[in-house]
Length: 185
Image (cartoon, rainbow, N blue to C red; front, side, top):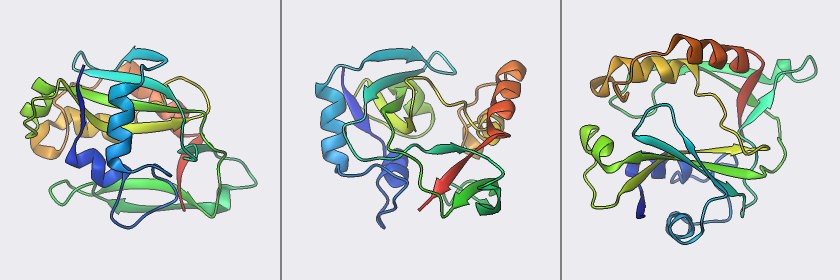
């Protein structure tokens, strides 16, 4: 199996200006090499047939991406309208500022098939492309954010994947994200 780091994921996981809430202690090339040379602990089905999740034990100092919202940290929550790329519409996002979660035990790499990547404008000879990564305490998928599910349902022209909204998955996502938030360092 061959895996590449897509430009989309590179910009988010390895930004030009280093951030504490992205992949740490690893270059994009080292990350890609690791995923091509180390067998994952598990391979999980993603939200669509073209999506797979590779579970790896965290070999970096990358911290958990989501943290529970408590009465003690609620005052650290911030929100704003943001777009992931210049072509996407801004959406409301929420995050913690001033919070330091524990180091993640697992990196769960989100992969799209070559065929799906081509539909979304990324042509590659690799079988799979990295489109994201979850940094977690447990070897289980963090639910996709509700707004990401909606964007996906809008189609590739709006920055999504074209997968219709799954109402039950959406409700599970809302239940998780009502009590958790990402953080920024």
